[in-house]
Length: 299
Image: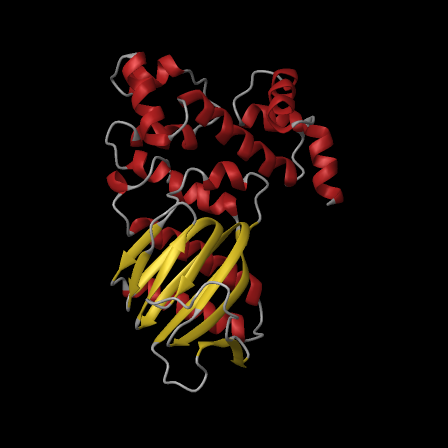
C-alpha cells in the first residue's frame, strides 16, 4: 500500500550537510540564521534551551530529540544564557567536536546536532506538508540513528554519501512516526491520522493518473462536498485540488528529471493531453515541461 509520508520524504531527497558533537559548560549561546534548511538535535547529557523563531523556548533534557524541517532562525543556549552582545566562546577541540562556554569547566551538556539540505526542487511545497517541529522524548532508535549519521559523517568510507542520504530519510520517517498525528500542526502527518482522509491521500498518491475531482474525493470519503472540503483544508492545510495539483507537479518534475518525455509524463500524472499538461505545468512552475527538462539538465 502506498505511504504518502514515505513518498514525500523520498521526494524531498534529504542530503547531508553538517553533523557535529557539541559540549557546553556554564553560560553559552549559539545563534543561527538559516535559509530554511532542516535542523536536528539529539541531547545526550544535561539540559539546554532551544528557541525557534516565533516560538516559546523549549527546555531540552537528556534523551530528547528535535527535528525542524525548515529552520529559518534559532538559538541554543544554557538554561541561563549569557548577556546579549557578549562574545561567543566556541572552540573546535577535534574534527567535528565543538566546545561552548567556559573551555576549562567540566562539560554540563553533550549533544549531537546536524543540518542537511533537501535536493528536491519542490522542497517548499513538500516540507510544508510536514510538522514544523518534531520534539520527541526517550526514543532510543532516534538517538541511535543520529549516532550513526555522526559516525558516518566523520569517516570517509565507500559510498558514504548514499549511506548518509538513506540514514537521513530513515531519521525523518522515524521522527515523524514518533509524534502523534492528531496533535501535529496541519499537514500530511495530521491528515494521515484521520480515518476518513487517510485512504483518500493514499489513493491520490497511489494513482495520480486517475481522474480526480473534489466531488469524487468527497464521495469516496462518504462526506458532502462542503464538509470534505473544509475538513481536508483544516487537516492538510491546503484545498483538496491544491494538494492533488501540487503532488502531480512534484511527480512530474521528478519524471522530467529522469528524462521521461513530456507526453508520457502528462499521462502518468493524470492529464488527458500533453497540451493540457503543458499549460498546467507552465502555470505552476513558470516554464514549459521541455524548458524545465533542459534547465534541470544544465544545472
